[in-house]
Image 1 (cartoon, rainbow, N blue to C red):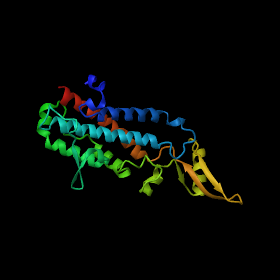
Image 2: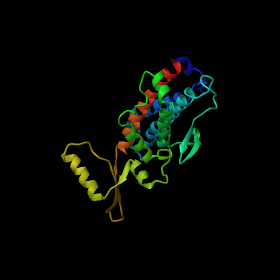
Image 3: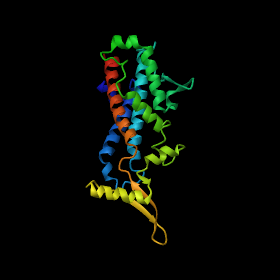
Image 4: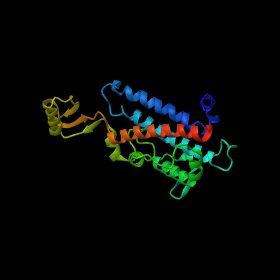
Length: 243
């Protein structure tokens, strides 16, 4: 398996989906560690980290689907690099390159597990047909936030409610911003950054409060799911291809 990773991506069993996912995953972790170096935490500062984790998940899913499709297809071991699984989307079969929804990819994963369960259980040392606890919820949460893989790529999308959630600075009534600042001071909590806009009479007319971790539930789901899928695709390579 190690030798395969030294080959051009199109020579990999999964056509390079897994290796590319690893690159996005490592980039996400590196940027996540250095997130505190992004200055004043502008509204877009967290988006690259979200996007890298999210795209790594999509690529890991496509790697796993391609491995299962090719390994348990009728042409194995004489696989063709042009042979990719089709993904069912609203009763239609779409090419894998056109599908970005984590939920649709995950549904296809379940379908392939069911279809090939006997062969999978006879070859694999791991019970791959058992989905780890929490994965379904993570998939649902991520897909609800970003069905088309655009939420963290652009400042605005066709989903205004989620767009507001992802910004680091959020609108807040001035009196609530002041109350939050006093609460943090009295409770000896870390300070909060507030942006206040005044009119010509020096009256505060609008205020924004800094949210250090936008969409925390989605962020945690991204990190947990990407780690699970990273291990799954590596394990499947070992058990189904190298054995």
